[in-house]
Length: 294
Image 1 (cartoon, rainbow, N blue to C red):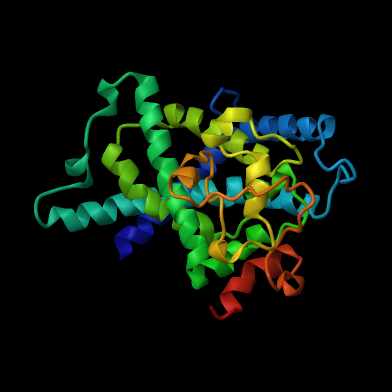
Image 2 (cartoon, helix red, strand yellow; image 1 turned 180 degrees about the vertical axis):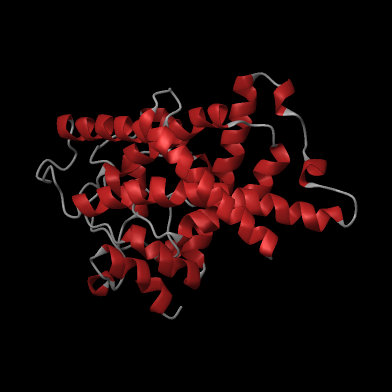
């Protein structure tokens, strides 16, 4: 146990140095400035092409979502990703080491031998499918749904709502994502940054005040007109656990019949049953799932 705690401790220490470097140096895969640039770009699109024209520029909970965006993206998400990845690798290697194996023993192929574009496409599709399934779990398992309610407490959609979520969510997502990605293996941070920024941009657009669906591409990529129905307060009985679970790709929802876009949802009510009693502040929302029975 001491070994794993030391790994987490070292991950956090290394992350602080990484964060300082992130803020003080400029390079194309810089997550700090990448988030700012993507956020400003999508916000400008909202201002130029607003879907709900009467929605204020600084909509309800704009600043709360902005705080969530930076808190989750930098202070939590990347730390959790680094710490969990390092600890999970050590844990699984220790278990497999008993029989003379390691996680790398299950690696299906060496992506370094593939063209970069092919390797990244495989990484993107596999990770998106795993996250689609994880998202479904967040809606179906009562214990996890209590955490996911934070994200669904959004009452007015805007780009920053993308990263309003409880700190437990990346723990669930990254834990379930680790093994499939480890089996693929071979990616470095610079390569993954391409996929990361693409997913970030699509996620921001999905939550933005934009009435777009990308035409025939809506059957492949998630979009604002589709994702707003994921946040609908009222859904038909056959969608009681939700619909439109895709993060970047809508493809999975159409393939597995979890899609639901009955009509233009511009003015539908957002939220979930009983959300009028849901806490409004950051700290209250963070502790809500911890003191709520499933």
